Amino acid sequence: MATRRILQPTARQVRLGSILRGLREDGGHGSQDTVARGLGWSEAKLSRIESGRIGISDSDLSSLLDRYKVQDRSLRGYVIDLRRRGNVRGWETDIRSVVSTMYADFIGYESDASDTYNVQTTLVPGLLQTYDYAAAVLDQHFPGMAEEERTERLSIRAKRQSVFDRPNPLVFWGVISESVFRHAVGGPEVMAAQLEHLLIMAKEYPGTVNIHVLPEASESHAALFGPFVVLTFPQRWEPDVVYLEGLTGNRFLEETDEVQAYSRLFKRLMMSASLRGAESLELIERHLNGYREG
Image 1 (cartoon, rainbow, N blue to C red):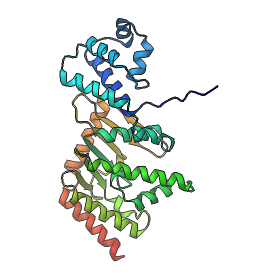
Image 2: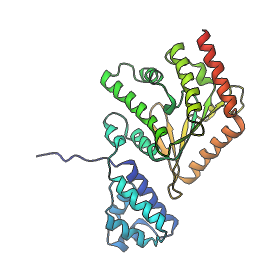
Image 3: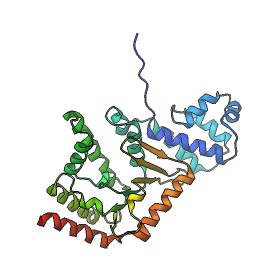
Image 4: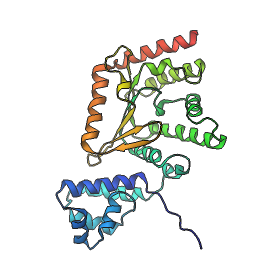
């Protein structure tokens, strides 16, 4: 007997479910059970739609939007388009056999985001890593990894960086602890090339790649908070998400209060504790010269 292959939900399905849950809760339309009974559905069906575990048909989506009295044509059109795109299994879905589901979802979110706000305390942010730097990081975290898997993971890391070349590129905002530049990941030559790459990216993508360095002398040391990413999306109906990456696992934060707390923290670190853009690039160049001079 053939085994049925269970498809993992796409990141867009999860986001669509989150938007639909928000429409129900923010609009005061009652519990999942109340809405489901009104539509002749089971509560389990609506629960699985809101969690992104299953997709939703055009007719069911139309019925749900009518139930929620969604009259805004822009919102209806966007939700319907997100449903359509959610059924397309992009490359971030295909890589789930190589990376964790959580990381694959993050890549899916990142692919559609308008802005990404990064705080990094120990490493250069993944979107700005060179191949050799990323390889050195991977070898430290997963020593002895099979060469095929290693190559595939590095290819995934490189492919993520295509977001800067989209018609509407992802805008990167980064607060990077100065200590990151003192840790010679991969050795002095690899680190020098990595710092040079940061300078090139900032100069070749002005306004798109924005780097701010949190100096070691700062009282607001980034290590007190740990690394995190806040992703925002082009449509006002899509909630921001926070991505936390740790040694033993990653997780998303989507509750409004938690997301706002991280957004405020990023703003404080960038505006009050970090160097301005030009000063940050000058500091990076000083560290680069230090590696070049040995």
